[in-house]
Image (cartoon, rainbow, N blue to C red; front, side, top):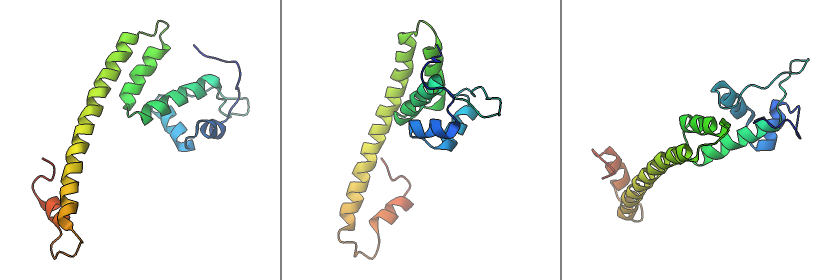
Length: 142
């Protein structure tokens, strides 16, 4: 449901400033359909309102949490439905949680490899660099 009360008539630069994002980010989210293009004034300027600002904040926060554009698109679709089906939103979040956990496991493996390589480097005076040799190896992360 659109909230037309409060902020009205924001131009794109002001919307970007208020949400703490880059002007190009606003353009991009419009281009990919996450932020609908606002109506224009008689002079042809875009006129964003509170609804646009709230939606952009949603997108920005979801991106901070690592949701993909498709996941955000699905969450916005659910948010736009009147009954806001929590079960479907939970399913999107559960898939994302599994992805986050997989990334954490990958990062922990990378941490172990890097820790070992840094320890092997010692003072950094070895003629052959263990880090470079590891990166030339078949598989750096096991």
